[in-house]
Length: 279
Image (cartoon, rainbow, N blue to C red):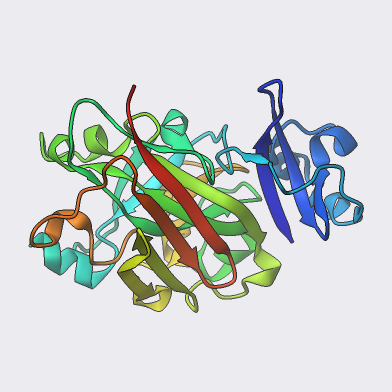
């Protein structure tokens, strides 16, 4: 099953299920304002019973998949080739930092290069969306807590990221992270370690990996993060990017206005976004 978030013509957000011929408006049919609310209400099974679309897919304005998460936890340095290209060493525990909801855009929306910098970089990643809340979740049980998976482009402003030893400043500029196009429910992805991820800029492949190469796999990430604080329905874990980022190319490959980025993960489709300059 594929679930989406979208913007109505009046600007209000809604959520839906992709079916043949279009999208079921779950906000209207079930009275849930968002996917986060759908998961929190435990009504995902109800969403599966609808098969007649309310909205055409053509012209749909995608919103960030989870526009209202309680938290977005990102994982740094979770592939060895990316650790190597940065000149860092593998840490015993995962490197975590936060993104804010306002830094996200949906599929098809422009990713915004800010006025403050031209060092705008791409990072293709697998996003994990929590469906059932929990604390102190064991890795052996962790997959049961997942609603589904999606593509994420964790756009980064590299010079601001380097201002201090903390990543956050460069990682949460407004409109720099893309999330979508839809969530593929966990029943369709029984093992998140058996996926292929590819990032493209203007059609050129710049990153390619398989998710079995994560240093800390998804179940262990959930165990570690849920020990720190409870995971809630709709929470997002962005699981890390592989090697090939623009900052470590020679010369560097910075995103510029007019570029088009794509993140594709097997079984999940393509997250595609143009790049625009901040107005």
